[in-house]
Length: 114
Ligand code: AMP
Image (cartoon, rainbow, N blue to C red; front, side, top):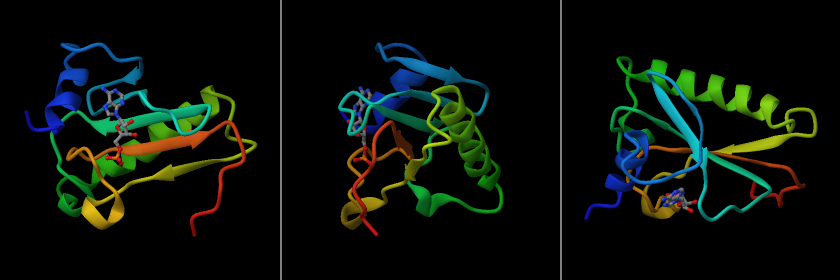
């Protein structure tokens, strides 16, 4: 099974996930292997394999993903202390699931990566 199928199944709720937000454009759910007290993945409802596929026709989705990340950060009470948004891309960027996703991490002081 291609690994992006997992995220498709989470969107249409055919496998269980802790969904914290969903609208017509995105779905957000808790990461199964959290790297911080708050670790939420935000994904587009339409399949986009990676950030490499963003163009002028679908960039509204990225904007929406950022807006919803901020909304969730506020709801989770991490916006004042701070948080990190990460998008891994392909092999060298450490992308394991081939379905575009944004990591929202917070709830502790995160180690610097750059
Ligand atoms: P990446 O390494 O950027 O591709 O991130 C993939 C993320 O998906 C990892 O942090 C995994 O822990 C997470 N993940 C994989 N399968 C699931 C799942 N079924 N539910 C929630 N998170 C998942």
